[in-house]
Amino acid sequence: MITSALIAFLAVNTYYHQQLKGQNDEKNMTIAKSIASFIESDEKLDLKNYLETQSAVGYKLYVVNEQRKATMYGEAFRVENLSDKVIDQVLSGEVYHGMGNLPSETFVTGFFSNELANTVGVPFESNGETYALFLRPDIKMLFTEVHYILGGMVLIMAIISLLAMLVVAKMLIDPITELTAATKKVGEEQFSGTLDINRRDEIGQLAKSFQLMTIKLSENDRIRKEFISDVSHDFQSPLLNIKGYAELLLDDNLTEVSRKNYTTVIQSETERLSSLTKQLLLLTSLDQLASPLEKKTFDLDMQLKETVRKFRWLLEEKEMTLEMDIEDVRFTGDPAFLDKVWENLLSNALKYTANGGEIEVVLTEEPGHVKVLVKDHGIGMDEEELGRIFDRFYRADNSRTQETGGTGLGLSIAQQVVKLHGGTIDVISQKGEGTTFIVVLPKL
Ligand code: ATP
Ligand code: MG
Image 1 (cartoon, helix red, strand yellow):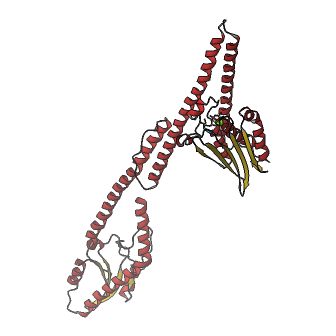
Image 2 (cartoon, rainbow, N blue to C red):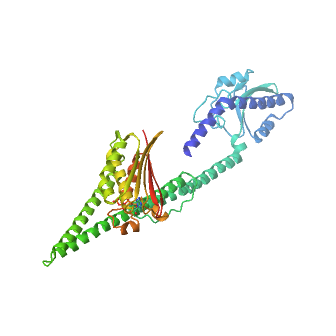
């Protein structure tokens, strides 16, 4: 406010010196001339009395006679800095433009400058004698009320704007304080609190983004905790089995057949633990890096055929038939990760189809992308199961009762890999009818 007051003062002062000074001089010159001509027109005029009356209506008059004797009418000037030369000039008939010619000074408002030089001067004659009349308005007398009114206005404006500023500042700071407290809470992993900020401005937007971030963080926190509990659970049951059967093996009176059976169980549980660890490592490597893919251009058809070949023995064991319709396709992607996708889709199709069933594997190249389809006529899934198969550790109940090994991580790994390749994985399934997985990968 102080700065703006200073700038305003300088601007107004400059305006006075550039524009108003000359006009003010003209105005006062006209008044001085009319006073002079009135005095000259009336020979019987009581000069002293008349000049006193003029000063009473708001003018300062300085009258000098031929003997250089000066008489002041009205309030005295702050400084009487009029040179004798000027007085002589006016007495000899010239006029004096002191107001118009007042030198410009930055920090003095010329309009208010109460000095004798800041006047207009005219000569007049009375009773045969020549006089010089210098005049300027008595600012103090004329404008006292105006000063109070303007000054009061400025003061009230300053007080009101100061109060308004305090209110606005408080309105700005309150939500920021609230946000800071909320940030601290989130830092301490407390995601429960809600922000009470309903604004449409930038702070409102910030609060909204913060709220969304908190929701996301709390969701992640939940997933993380769930994941840990799932992992622990999945490790726990094979470990318990191994422990139990190992204790049984300690029995000296055990038959050879039982011993073999127990050892087999221990062996398969160990394998399960090992594959679980591998899957988890794979998932972590997929999660952690922005792009863990090491892309290469390779024959996708060869890779699919190779995967099918790996499952030949299982197909024969289950007396299943597999139909292949595979085009020659070259594709750029991470072959090691993609291999995990085909492996899991095929192993699922085999696992969740009864003996003697039929599986179809199709690879086609379409403009811009390649499509892999794995179709079985197995147990299928209902809506509820379908919605969860990509969740980590999810295994439908019937797949557990099928006594097939598995961790429930296969499809979430597959989905992650496909996503990293910019593709999609879709599933169509009907309980008791069969399941079709469709993977679409964009070509670069
Ligand atoms: P993993 O692949 O880790 O060894 P998994 O096969 O049980 O174990 P996912 O491949 O992630 O795990 O599959 C999750 C669940 O989805 C399966 O347990 C099964 O219930 C269901 N599922 C997956 N594929 C099929 C399918 N072709 N037919 C019927 N159900 C399926
Ligand atoms: Mg699987």
